Length: 295
Image (tube, helix red, strand yellow):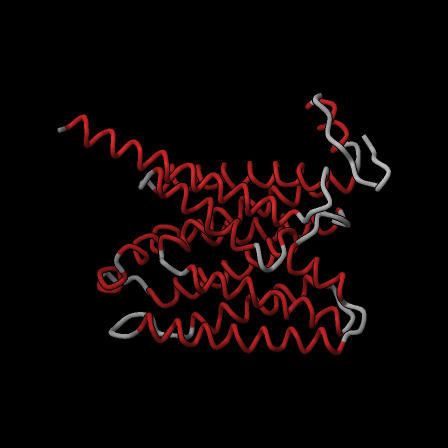
């Protein structure tokens, strides 16, 4: 139902509301793109959480903002800025040695420094580009409007390549994530595998930023993966659960954003956070009941 202010009000007929959503080509493309992004983010995010590289993932998400702003400033598609800056950030983080005493602290320091410098560049690009306020809101908080068939195809192609490469390095990456010292002793090129993973993570962040925005892309990367790892330690089941949660919160978030004036990133992040909190509460209650029963 259309209201006087131009917004759409949902009805009690869920089937009719879904039909209305999918009657518009831009919403069909939004659901296609959202599903593609959710799958890539969940799979890469699962390894990111396992490897304790959430700060690196957050940095790539933030760096997507100055990348998109710079691309818009020079008159090219924001997607080039997302991918260019996110992949460049991945290469910078990959160049930092992680093993050995102080390795993680050094990585965090360099990653944080890179993030601060990139944000400063983003604000400079905004100052140089006049009348950019509405664009800033879309870059930071996401939008599902204006997604074209060509963008969906590009997102699908990138996701297929990313997941294919990840499947090729999946077993050594899992080994190196759990115990990098032993993996290196067994002949696995830990530094190379880690660098490839970070580049794939950068590509996934660049993808998701185009829908959720650079500030809230982190929600799709970390929350479904963290929730899945709370529920199970089995890699295969954990990956499947992460994908299922990411797709569900993206679909519901798209529907909520269509019937609201608020950005999609808010709904996706809130839903993912709610699922994570409920999982933690249920797990805590179950553990307490188990201890009481055992005693």
